[in-house]
Image (cartoon, rainbow, N blue to C red; front, side, top):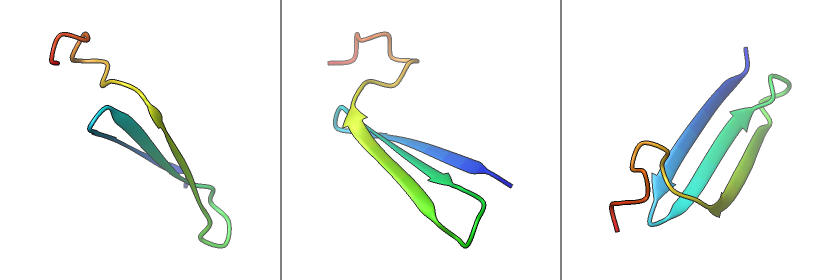
Length: 42
């Protein structure tokens, strides 16, 4: 089963995906804002 976790911290987005094979985890970190803030919480 594929599982994805998305975290927001200090203007960064961190995504963790389990690729469903041998316990490998894919991590992606990039600048971004949580979609629910609307860019007003600065």
